Image (cartoon, rainbow over all chains, first blue to last red; front, top):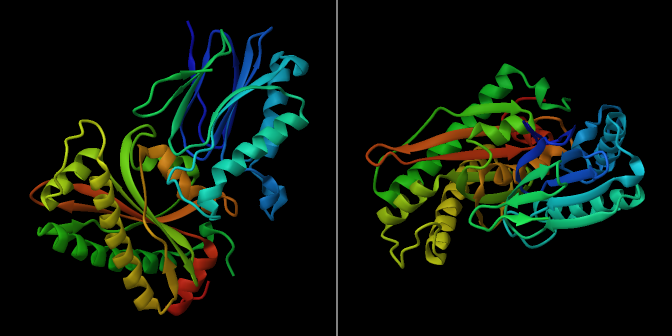
Length: 163
Length: 206
């Protein structure tokens, strides 16, 4: 039997095959699915903001909320479960501009900034990015199957994408 | 001076509730004129909540919603969000006589423009009444629309204020119309700095 483990906003979790990790309704947030295909251990993070240095009170940072802190912590959690740091690969989804706003407002830019920050973080951790479904102006729900390492991305009124 | 919403007192919350009441009352009057029908508003609720709670407060995260967002900036910064179910959005179009080619699932371009304009009128009357009451200068953006999962929509205003505080403050009212059972939510989000400014104008120190 496989269980579906739901990842909330500013949250992450790890599990192993045959379980499924799910995160609902990503807008400008980004869902990061990390996978070790040898042990079939996976982790999923739902980050909300690009950079924890935005917070003045650095002692009280919620590390799961930011791309720069959450991904590194998630990798550590997967390693504790038995994953090999050097085998971990990534697939990402989200980072939309939900209201299709132009200009430089926080809401208009946050999706792009989240995606950029996630990619920079993956790069600095040496994690290859295998696939992405990011940007545009629609919400996404992501199902991450730890048996196969595939993610299914669902949006309202659109076909399911399998990555 | 307070730095976090959780330090707000019952008096502060009471004043914010009253502001919401006045803002939503004005918006309801505008909507009532548009629809030619009585529009009721609920008592405003001032909530200070974690992100997850905000996103799931109005419905399930994947539920389809029609939403119009207005940014305001100047002496106070924030967002007004008007949320409707797809069914109610279509009903409002019928009341207004916005008729065009039938779409079975979504809304046509014409209807999207009409919903945007309704959100614009509601949000502007809400903010206009708060601005005239407090004497605060604010600029209101053009209306933006999104028709999508409620969780993805609500994350947009939440992220704007998510960096500074672990909680989000919002003032929410529910509109309903007697005969047709329509209902929608109007939610105002703002930051601690703007609250200080708004309450300060009303003689409350933060």
